[in-house]
Length: 105
Image (cartoon, rainbow, N blue to C red; front, side):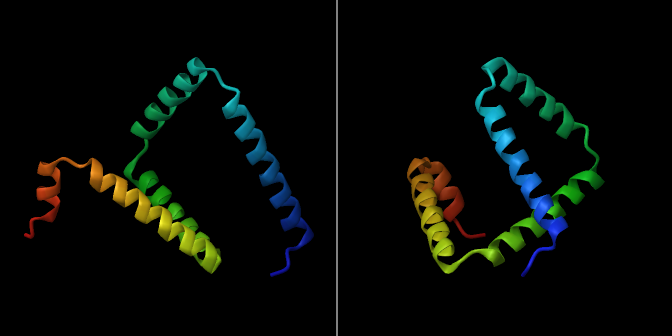
């Protein structure tokens, strides 16, 4: 897939923004980070159901495209990470939690 000049320009701009935001977040003080967290808490609390659904749909579409564009190697790596995560998760569960998840309906 060949990108048009406008698309390339847009990609470049997005990459620059991404880098800028990454550095900005790394350089924030704890107080600034806390302010940011509070802001997003209020923001998400005030969103309507319609907005939430829209965001979910956008996320689904993004994930679908991302998974389609992954190479086999990346897919394998992702599977391995998921396996490791699930293994650690199960080890940390209490007996009561384990029994709750295992018991059939």
